[in-house]
Image (cartoon, protein in one colour):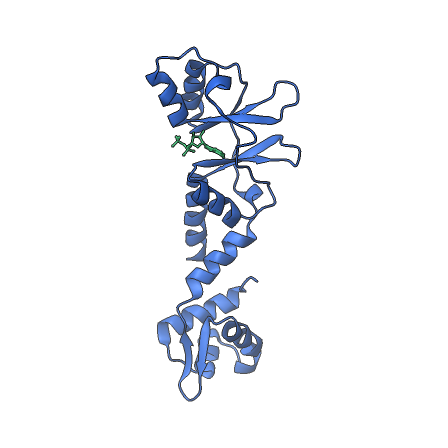
Length: 204
Ligand code: ADP
């Protein structure tokens, strides 16, 4: 569920003035207490506010976490994903490194020349490891992490699910694919950090 603007205002008022009566909250908002009845019900039922008899409303401290969790589960990956850099499997390690710099990317996705389906990916460390062996002319097909070992996500999944996959598998990015594995985007740890910063700024 999503809190309304007024419910968020109530949370802020309680945070700053707790304990505070329903009448005083209504006064702060220039409204009557009965107008706020359903807002109070939502906020106490979700555990954000605690209503204590003869004391007033108290902020439970859950707000930021619940709002954050709510946003992370509600926003789909497609709102945050970025353009992936896609190369072919015969691309050499040297060319791949050039692409990384050109597009300021951390990972390249490799797709099949004919079907355009995801077949592999190479990360910065995969490329560095290959250079250590002085194999700059090696084709990516030789060094890439390949299907079916690639962790992917779909555009309709939530940002929380993407973050959980990144964290669980200790990887920096996820290819976002259609059900038949065509690559339509990419989500990275930095995307998610940017999203969190935007979210916090918009809450101010
Ligand atoms: P780096 O290697 O630059 O630290 P990652 O942490 O993303 O970047 O990659 C670590 C290893 O995991 C690499 O070998 C890479 O090929 C592999 N990898 C990266 N992303 C995925 C993914 N989505 N699914 C499976 N393996 C991945």
